[in-house]
Length: 329
Image (tube, rainbow, N blue to C red; front, side, top):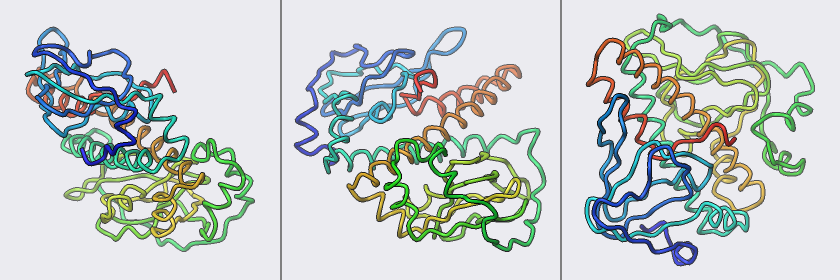
């Protein structure tokens, strides 16, 4: 509740619900976020073939639907009042207008939403890693990696990369000021799980594999291509890297130091706001990818008749309550 200072409460609307009343309905478009002041609610997922599954129970001080503040989305579960409920509701349009004005309170909440989404992404990926996939391979040793200078005019590529959507030339220049750019050969290790997160890397050309290695088996968590930022979440969380990252093919990378990323991300300049939006897009894309992996595992569990496994995976996928609406992007 500390995230909602008086400026944010000034755009919030007080709402109340009776016991059994729905706050959100599964499948409907999400319009904003709720912060519970009094009472309790339950998130319920409608299961294929009938029945519901409780995926979360929330009470005073809990917030849900936060993803709708930064991106259009749909309700992945219904939320029902378990008692008399008093809450605040913040409409996405009102919140986005406050962010556009660079209001400090709105930017603080936006960064808090990023942390929430990051935690949810970690939990969802952990659930995926519990299930070995047919494409999992024995972990391979990384090749010797010597950084070499970029062999092409990499600056000309930046404005067309998805990461820089909405940036003007000045903002791009401010972001990359002091950054190093280099190339690595195929199979080179960029960073390893457990290493301090001292930098993140933007792919300019080529591709990176994000790998989770457990008991000698490598599971590909994601594949990052041109315009994707890798390693930023560990910096924002103040944690060590949690995965191995290596080049899928020869790659040209821009290295953004921990200090540079945090200084910009925690600021309120135009470049800082653009960076926050770019990181949100990166997070939402990663969550959409993980959702696809969970959907594949859910389907496989249903075909095997593994009901409990299927329901556990469904609960992990629906922990978002509001999920990105891919058709609206």
